[in-house]
Amino acid sequence: MPLKILVTAKRVEDPESKIKVKPDGTGIVTEGVNYKMNPFDEIAVEEGLRLKEKHGGELVVASIGTERSMTEIRAALAMGADRGILVRHDGPLDPVVVSAILAKVAEKEKPDVVLLGKQSIDDDQNQVGQYLAERLGAGQGTFASKVESLESEAEQKKQPGLVLAADGKSIRVVREVDGGIVTLDVTLPAVITCDLRLNKPRFASLPGIMKAKKKPVEEIAGASLGVDLAPRVVVKRLSEPPKRQGGKKVTDVAELYAKLKGEAKVL
Amino acid sequence: MSNVLIIAEQSGGHLKKATLHAISAGQVIAGRTGGEVHVALLGKGIGALASALAGHGVTVHAADADGLEHYLAEAFAPVVVGIAQATGATYVGAAATAFGKDLLPRVAARLGAATATEVLGFGGAGPAVTFHRPMWAGNVLAEVDLATPVKAFTIRPTEFPAAVQGAAGEVKAVAAAVDLGALPVRFVEFKEVKSERPELTEARVVVSGGRGTKGDFKELEALADELGAALGATRAAVDAGWVPNDWQVGQTGKVVAPDLYIAAGISGAIQHLAGMKGSKVIVAINKDPEAPVFQLADYGLVADLFKAVPELREKIKAGKGS
Image 1 (cartoon, rainbow over the protein chains, first blue to last red):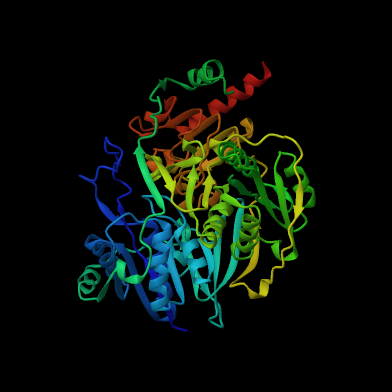
Image 2 (cartoon, each protein chain N blue to C red):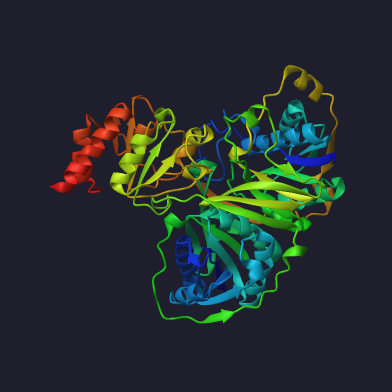
């Protein structure tokens, strides 16, 4: 059964960047910071591609932001997504607003599966998939993982970790939770959020990058969707956490043991 | 008056300790708003647990039903929302565990509430509560205001003490009729990873390994057993399939704050440090003197972990006898 899949691609600071807070606490210093697709969304794009390769169908990538987010959409298209949707919105994005926008996109596109990263590595909120599922009245499979490790043969063969039921009515999700692994069958249309161990995302090939330039991207004005765009998670102030006073070295195990016992008193 | 509802987490009638930390966070808010703390407890066969929880000076709303035996966000959310509305709760919270992070946003969406994730503490004045929470892998602290009438939050358990026993509160039974067949999801199974060691987030000592172990955790396991410690790992070690997923400490894994954290063969990526820098004492053992973990460690030892870890274990063992 061919699947229509909607996947998200948020533009975030490169996780390798050094993040510094502006002196007035109104934001972070963006000079010299690189941007890329949220790594968890990359996993979602990869999983969408694998599902499409196995079952056929269409993979649509959506992002919300300014013109700059077109870079992340093109990155997903270069990996192999078929077309893009950019919802233009220049302002703070919180999970309430983002999930409301994505719900509008999903209502129009009617995907069988929505795949999202479980969280974005800038705000670290881990909410959008859950809000979206509730808004759509859909089942949620959060923190999707798989049983095999990322070094396994199944992973080498780029098999999807999400397994579509034979009748095409549900999708099996293996979830990483505290103290074990939960397996759920989520009815389609389903909302799935992707965790680290679901797959290793592919790199875009040169032909892929060339093709991506010609793939269609629809632009929608955020204000045209009939969604209240006012942020509900209002960031009042940012600050840097207190620094740890570390850096002391010991010369050998005997000194380490003596310090842990005598000075730190943790043994 | 703003009441607070805390969602309890249990498994087979056993309480997850993180719940007690969430209750104490709820008590802080209630102290400021002049409200009461209510607790929602959902499951099957939870009567004894409901009474025990009420002993923390809270009213427990217990929904005991067949359809709630296995946790499903789709089944739990409507029941929690019913309790939130019945108690007039304007703050709805849980611990930031896999359960809390999966359930709370779904509850919040039904209540039209915004959510603050992984809350470390509260700000603002009087009944106007703001939330302190980490962003960018803990490199930034944010103070956020939730601009919705009902506010939802998950707390980081290591940042709040466990609630203590208080005046016995009331237990109220909540009727919950759950039609599992009507839900857009079906529970298949839960495979528990059993361990004799303490839970990672609750252990007094954590012994953690990274790429430097080259997949050989035997010496770390032996040291952990000697110390009664939990075992942790970096994302690299987990991704390589060397150790189970739920050992991962970091931005996207578990956040721990033990009395003693021993990082062996860990270079110290910021994503890993985000999960352990709240530890009281950090020991780093690494061959590379330039490893970033040393900047954070209280005691750094430049050494081969395969030599240093067994030596440390022998000293601890010998020290116990004296």
